[in-house]
Length: 394
Image (cartoon, rainbow, N blue to C red; front, top):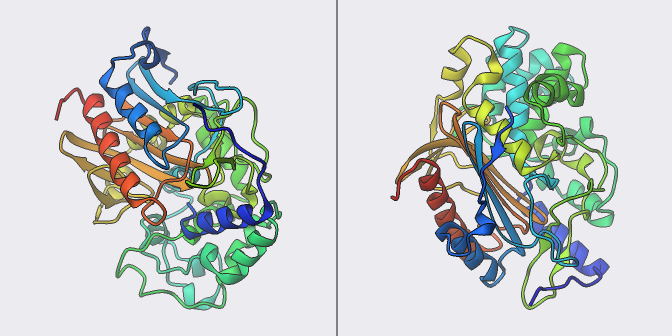
């Protein structure tokens, strides 16, 4: 029986917002005979088992791309009210996989010599706290900056709890942490921070004098043909969309797709896209096709910080690069990013040459803090999908 959502109470909304705050962050033809047409497909069966698991998502959709062919495997529903199945053209919140988009913009500007990886906040954003001045673009992109996370400050949390649809000035989000010192000496350790990619976007604006939204359109969306990808400020979702749910038994399942406005996450996690668009993006991004003919930027991007994990951790062993993570699985290596926010958990990954890609989208939030056992199961299934992508049984 489908789990129908009930009207969200204000108290429940505050609880969901609090949970979200804890962990804020070329076209292909679909293959004939998609996963939903094969009830005994082992990949589909694994998705169905996740949907049936306690606290599991109402729906999952995975897109495996290989050249000009794309295989879609899905289970469950995109909308509990209608029972409609997830589709590759459904809009969804991509959470912290949006950080890869800020990486794409920054590295494009590095390739075209408008930015350097060793540019500092003092040089490019002198209005930010002096104590943060030595932080470099490289350290922002690989999360070794030490910047305090604005989304974890009490003032930000209080504002969002009071009004989840509050319209923040996205370009002033770092003000919430301006009175805080660096967490550690820049470059000395790894710590995932939502502040990092806000600063990356601001640096891109500073050197181009172009709004970040327009940079995304001109550098990423346009060249890759991402027609259903955008960075909104508000909380509304474009139809049709993959509804996101809070699944917290024994509480009733609730639709939280439009719970939070995107102005408060902006370049760190505010993008809305589709599985189809994300498949195009990650293949081009992981393969380095967005950075021009030179390979120097790609080499710099792949200087890995051992053990640096995205949030939540991706499949296999995780290492951090510049707005990109290496996932070393039992079947081989893929490069990508993960993300989670209220109602959604995302994985995008591709082979290092970008020829094969995987987008794995779940319509509930799953992370180490809220659902550690389910996250363990999710990562195991994601690794099995990576093995299928690479053509290995593992």
